[in-house]
Length: 386
Image (cartoon, rainbow, N blue to C red; front, side, top):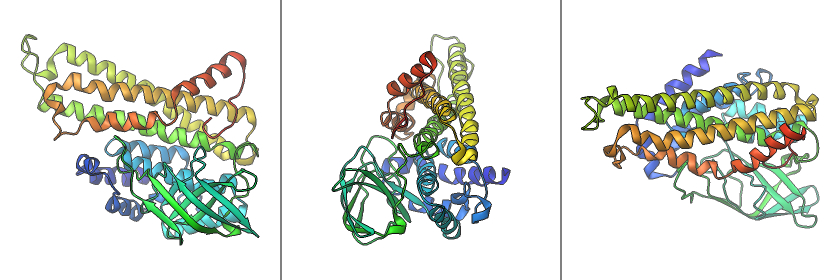
């Protein structure tokens, strides 16, 4: 499977040419998304039986890290493509899984998200076998330029939570490219509006994942794994840019006795600490990815204890990667110097991207789950974020 790494690395170099400028612009990276479509990497996780490449989650997450080094927004879009694509596998019928895997592989569909379980802004009404939804969703990552959307709603009568899959161009769907956060500025994580949007019976997922079976409750582990790899990839990119700047632009402090910043002992010591912290977090992230592979292979045979152990390890990796990335992306300025804060470099985008994402799923509550498991042997209770 090494060929996927080569393709991902080649695309990363193409992304790099204008990543800093595109971050300032925001909006939808249409051209780059089309490059991803053309690469075939959108079918990396799809089993070969359905026309895909037969890769693993650790393969997908490796690509996420490679791209996060140069463009965390595109890494986010790519990771969330697979988070959404996994929905019919986790919560659908065998027929739905087969259809969506096969058609995605055939058509290079790019999946987007408009399924935020904490946002009750969409209401669905049953009309026979179909559902009509109205309202709007926030945090709809990847919705602009998506081919397929995973959406969620609450039933008008029962209040139950449901998910479904629709073409992004369905009548009544309005994707607003209105994302305006300080970070992840090209993820299109804004609003989608729905006006009398129809879902056919075959588009409705029959097993909303929470509380139905163990395997179907893996969605939080997938999303937290994707984010952990975005965090640690971003840290790697920040370190690499800082190293290049230190070698070529930074000045040693005038009383240090050194001519080059790249030879000044205090700067080298700081780089040593940053790189060590990065490597430690990376090791935990990679370990969690391999355990996710094992859980995914078990499919419906996954046990509650196995899911619990995975949830704890993924949560730990997410917390450590986020904490490390926040530290690295902030402290790189200490080894580059004051001139590195010039807006033309846009080095602050690394910190802004990590800061934006780490707030969406707070570390505090993951740490409580980890502590409860370690001290009391209590598996994290499956939920939308745990």
